[in-house]
Image (cartoon, rainbow, N blue to C red):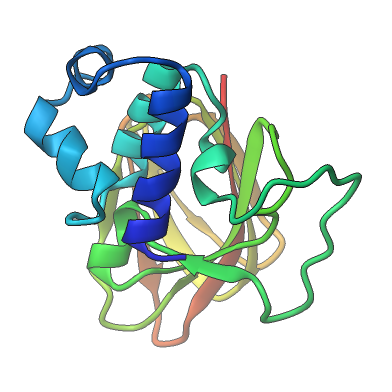
Length: 183
């Protein structure tokens, strides 16, 4: 899904709530111009900004990534068939594969995140909680003054409003399940 489609969804949700650009931008801590660029797909927004906009609109983050209206009981995503989306770490080279985009109203947004050799260290802070489970490779993770190396099979659940960072350890890709959880 590209920025234009995400922006169209955001604009449609804003209009459906009968809110102005000024109102939503103010509630999200953005300028009217910044929100307008997001709605028109002229900018690639980090997940923290999208979370702020979703909170300002009173909707789940997943609503921004929906392609069509339909009632579903489940979403099956086959290996390698998730939707590649732009998130905070994309600018660092990280690859995010959304795994359940078409399920409406979910409080958890699961991704398969891949970090490759040469990708920069990611430093993040956003609303909600986060869960990661390492599937391949090794990463160094820093959170609230604690630093540790995670290997295959290790999991971490944390309050993502706390500044956190991660970087690849070694010369092989790291892949992990990453779930952004609205809190």
